Amino acid sequence: MADVKRAGVRALVAAALLMTASFGAQAADKEITLGFSQVGAESAWRTANTESVKSAAPAAGINLKFADAQQKQENQIKAIRSYIAQKVDVIAFSPVVESGWEPILQEAKAAKIPVILTDRNIDVKDTSLYVTMIGSDFLEEGRRGGHWLEEHYKNDKGPINIVELQGTVGSAPANDRHAGLIEVIKDDPKFKIIASQSGDFTLAGGKQVMEAFAKTYGSKINVVYAHNDDMALGAIQAMEEAGMHPGKDPVVVSFDATHGGFQAMVDGKINVDVECSPLLGPQLMQAAKDVVAGKTLPRRIKTEETVFTQADAAKIMPTRKY
Ligand code: GYE
Image 1 (tube, helix red, strand yellow):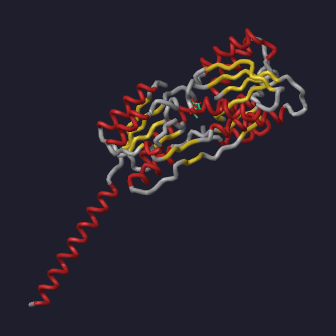
Image 2 (cartoon, rainbow, N blue to C red):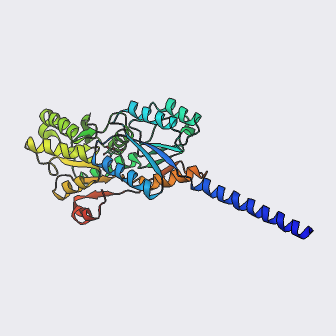
């Protein structure tokens, strides 16, 4: 009788353990909801980034809520606040500008919702406001553009007059691609930035700013340093309409290395394109899963990138994914 009882207890314990195990597994398998606030649709880079995030989510079994902020910080704040209200598991966003994020991120922290930054960094004192930042090192990209110029003009006494088409005012890539260039050329007085203006990372913006630069500075311009391909492509149109020969005189330095940028290199109109990968979706999904599973993530997950020139553009172009 005692044996029968013991066996019964054992069976009960086993059943209870099984139930706990399956409940546990259910909890771990619970579909993660990720609220993502995108900057906008300003460039080919951004389109590829959106596509990467949208396709990586179902592949990772993640339920994605997506909002396009049309390059406005207030829209991003609204989207994040609505994700908090909806009690999503993780919030991710690509911050349009670097400053002004503390209040909304404190709201997310109070609601115990982890925040992941993608693509662009922010400027906050309290770094506990986000878990990790996934994306490129824009300062290094700016340095790479500067080093290419140094090398290209090493036997030229100058002056080398640069006009700069900046990205969105206050954004991390605009700040850092500028700072990286300055860091490299500041000790070489032959390089001069004669004008600098924002074209907001758009083709139309780049064209408009370049039209004005061409009128004011004309043949004095030796280098166009455009913070992304869309602005470089707009600037190329403006220069050609003004009878200039982009890629020869002036030299054109650009960033992103999108399909359009590559085509312009193949056509001889962009000289160098510093790579910046938008394909961050799979890394973001992995990070969201890890954070929900309670794993500790590195504070910074950097993207691997390189620099492309006209010499290798035609060969490499077919292998490009964006
Ligand atoms: O270079 C530009 C886009 O934040 C890296 O934003 C991104 C930049 C990219 O609009 O094309």
